[in-house]
Length: 433
Image (cartoon, rainbow, N blue to C red; front, side, top):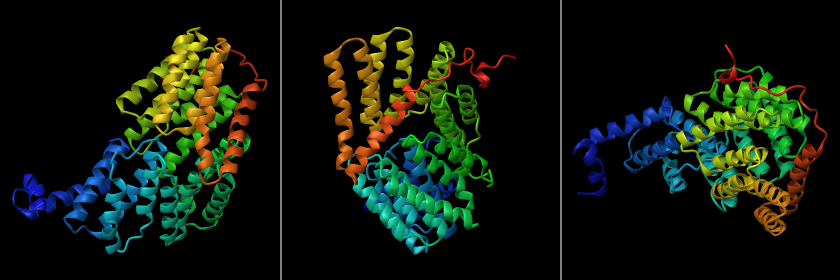
């Protein structure tokens, strides 16, 4: 008995046709995407479907293959946006082995390369492989829309590397294409959201805000999950920027819109809602609403625990909660949370978090006059940023680091308007009947 026969015997007995039907139906279900599982769980199942179809050479209709490939690439990118790994160790090998299946159906190969590039985004030392896959994706593009899709992913990669001029060129090209080509116009919200992120990371807050608002104002169909995702991101970061500009009540309103925004699936809503709760809690904390702030941090922790969210998400939450503990005078608890935040950022590949949370920790240690520990924490923050010097553009990375740090320091030191009254949360959980 061959290994293939042993594999499908448990599913369809010795009947190969029955096994083929089981695999084909599973593949079709994955292509439709009617489930509410988390992206990495869905990806894990889709990788298994891909493996079965390519390994046993099971014939699938071209329309189903096309739908499957589009969803597969989209989920891979979505999972990375959430800070997740696809959770499959041999992900690139399985995807590559299945590539001939899509090629035989005459489908463009750029989604295959985009999915692999997304995987490498959260793999240690994966930058070179990610760059290589994105270059292959560009070469595989057939239409202007294909190129926009790949350029958006490549621009985000450039932002991650603090190669801001490269990202700006890519995004300006996307903007020009989406403005003039009707087949690409529906991607305008994503382009503006990415442009907003580009300016946000460099401290150009008002320019970033204008792009987030443009993403929300774009005249495109609202039934696309890509549009919904881009606009949710625009609401979220608009709130972040408004908060940094001292416009607290507007910031809360924008973040509550993000929290109550319609998503493609309930699972995606829940995953995003944790981060909305953190952002709302941080603003309420500064506005003196400690109890409401704690409520939102607790909701975020429940969400992350329920969805088995990654260590980077918990790190962001721990860092936010540490500020609440500082306000309450619980410095030991705050330091413990910041220790967790630094460890989680490193474990989750969240490089900027490792730097920022280590600096928050150094600031708290300095306030407690633990000067030796302060120096060690500052050196650790510098060490967390040094890997950027070995990346694609070392000098640009250094300048980007300075720009990023100075933008946030400038906002922290600027004279902020004191809220005329104690802030209250406008979200449904706190509305009085």
